Length: 235
Image 1 (cartoon, rainbow, N blue to C red):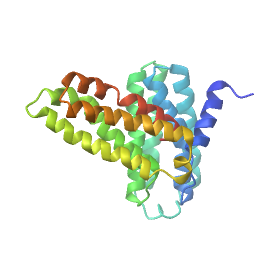
Image 2: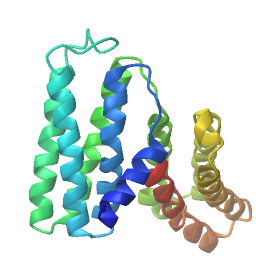
Image 3: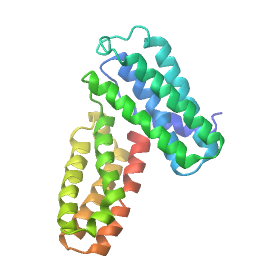
Image 4: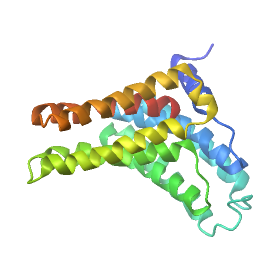
């Protein structure tokens, strides 16, 4: 019988997987499932679950490197940085595990964020686009609002600046809907989580249009939860 953590991870893998156009991207996406769990668990300060998830991601990455590292197939065949990227991800997992062992889960979370960027860069160099790239684009804009929104709101023309940035976030939320694979668009859980993300952006827009600074701050703070739930399952 599967342990609860392993069972939940299997369900996440099944829900978030999609057939890729090439074996490397497909293998990369399979390792992404435990990686997403690791990000979620480190963020929630769950030490043992974080360790298990990183170990699974690390093992999957090692299998992929062993299979494709020496002779990657198209479209990665001509990528002179392919091996270096494989090694870079491996180093991140080693560092994150060391931090988790020391119960430095905040630091481990920040360390693990590097994997997302390395993998995205690997795909970008080789003209490969997957749904995760649209999730990453939304995440980058959302994090900017979370990190700088309150400071920007207090600046001259801050409400207008935030309105413009929220327009970008609204556009990227729309891309999550239009660029989702057909299987996800027909998945009731995905649709429900996406609606929560869309509502969080709509609430922020409404607060900005009302020029209600307190409500704007509150709405910015509510952006991360819906995205995180969607990312863990389908990111």
